Image (tube, rainbow, N blue to C red; front, side, top):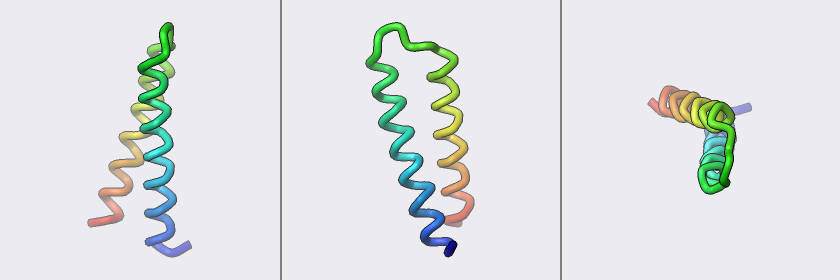
Length: 54
């Protein structure tokens, strides 16, 4: 897998997680631990994207 295709895949996953986080935040009674886990995954993806883009 080339670097550019890997970055594209990471960006897609990050966008998907963003949508999941937004949906979870609007959902009443969302498990705080689940939401925190989603945000942590999103942050790790963002850091990986930034690291590979530098």
